[in-house]
Length: 104
Image (cartoon, rainbow, N blue to C red; front, side, top):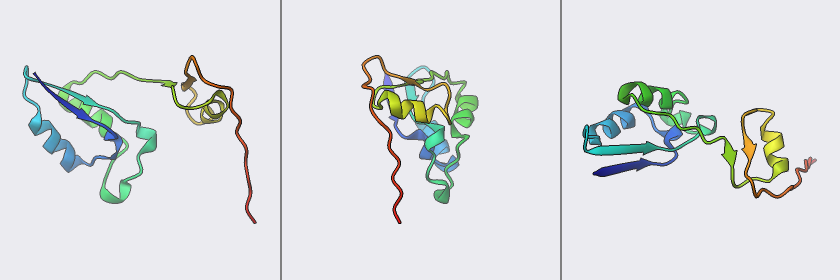
């Protein structure tokens, strides 16, 4: 069995997707694409926030969401929930604090 693991998948472009798909052999390979479409920062090199749905359609892939943040405090997750309501704090998250600073 061959495992292909792609981290920061939200930053790939369509050419890279085609190359990745060529590495997959049916019944021999398993691919894991990890990323967050809300963190797509490489549009200047043609990355696409819809890249997950493109791969999902091409490979009939299964999507396994991970709505739990194991890195951020409860306060940070509460701020992020204003943009991503389904985000949740991890079970051992500290309370934390969010402060805004303005520089003149």
